[in-house]
Amino acid sequence: MPENDKRIYIFDTTLRDGEQSPGVSLNIEEKLEIAHQLARLKVDVIEAGFPIASPGDFEAVKAIAREVEGPVIAGLARINDRDIDRAWEALQYAKKARIHVFIATSDIHLKHKLRMTREEVLEAVRKGVARAKSYCSDIEFSPEDASRSDMDFMCQVLAAAVEAGATVLNIPDTVGYATPEEFGRRIAEIREKVPGIDKVKISVHCHNDLGLAVANSLAAISNGALQVEGAINGIGERAGNTALEELIMALHTRRDFYGYKTGISIGEIYRTSKLVSRLTGMPVQYNKAIVGKNAFVHEAGIHQDGVLKERTTYEIMNPEMIGSFQNNIYLGKHSGRHALKQRLEQLGFNLGEKELDTAFKRFKELADRKKEITDRDLEAIVEHEIKHIPEKFVLESIHISTGNKVVPTATIGIRIGDTLKEEAACGEGPIDAAFKAIDKATGIPVCLKSYSLDAVTGGKDAVGEVTAKIEYDGQLFIGRGISTDVLEASARAYLSAVNKVVYEKGEEVLGNVAVNS
Image 1 (cartoon, rainbow, N blue to C red):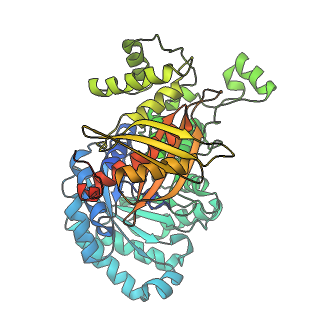
Image 2 (tube, rainbow, N blue to C red):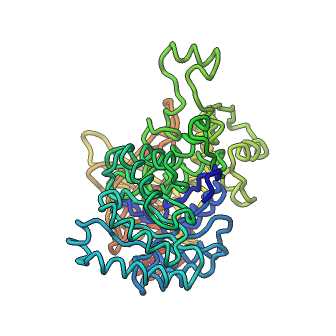
Image 3 (tube, one colour):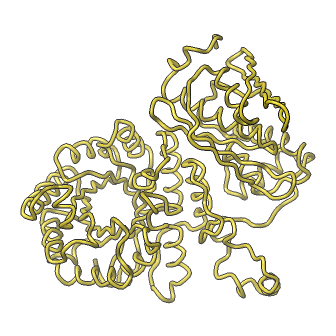
């Protein structure tokens, strides 16, 4: 690439490496929703998945290739015929497709994982890249575990990939071993030693095992890398990937130092972060840079005084730049549908009429319990109550009897089609009792794997946000629910996950439900 190209390309792997985070399982609709939001964020490349990994991954990549326009759509493949053919089978529908092939180059991987010689790896790269090139023009090659690979051998492999037709060379710090200084030097040395390197983009994919993923990526940029791979909120294997929102805002805020720009629509960063957190069930830590709850909150009196006098005394970024509106507006039970719609649009939610009807109904229900509805409440309503998964089971009522000297008992009313079914159950606690009553009502044998509760807003009438992960037939399903009543929020979250089971597995799972719907 020419030296005066001052643009950094953003390669998003949230849907591939990000989904490999322990406990994360996204269905096709959820992946599509994230992919469409990534397109609004204007990332350059979306790595939609690993098509050979499973039928579900294949169908998700194919759906994204068909439906999502704007970014390049990439699919990952090991450097063998079967993987590459399967990747193209899914990617062929994309207007802009990229096959991303990889093979390990470190001696430890060659000896213990691949059981291949260096000569065999070189030959596999030549054949694999050429095969991928026969399908499409845009080919990315990655030497896995690059940061622990012998430099001379890795440069041989990279040269072979360029000669076979690779257009992007991605240098992964697969196990998060590198430090910024040495990783930057490695990129500089690659630029010096690999023939034809000026004809391709150098990319980097850094993991965060030592907390250095963003720093390593920035060091690589300073030494000539033009593409950075990462995930929203930094999710991914083990300690995760380069957090794209941090990388993007570092380049934006310190353009005076780095001299590079991106094509990112930074006003979509906050919404993208929230969406990924919601759908993956992975909460963002409060002190997370850029998108954390406390990222723009000032507690110390000196800081508060300074910000009130001049924001830039203690803020190097304006939260509104990333789409995070810190101001609260007064919306209460007397507010109308038009006022709600206007505020939702200001927050970036453009709802259809039916979706707005649903949001308005939940808004009114919540307003009867709270004096003031904040922006965070509105975000929670839209994100948790505007359903994309059909509801086979609808929560109609919940009654809990509990105390320190009584056995917790829950009575749950669930509507299944036109029929209302009520069940009661006892449990170790009120939430356990509610979940057992739901199990009886639905007749679907699921196992609760994890449960988390967070307060969306502050105060004694705070909205509780519950995430429940359940397992059915070896697959994880994530449900979410909100309410000022944490028991109701818990029941909604659990039932949301059960509805996903029905949606994903089909209605044959309803064999034990004693009603027709």
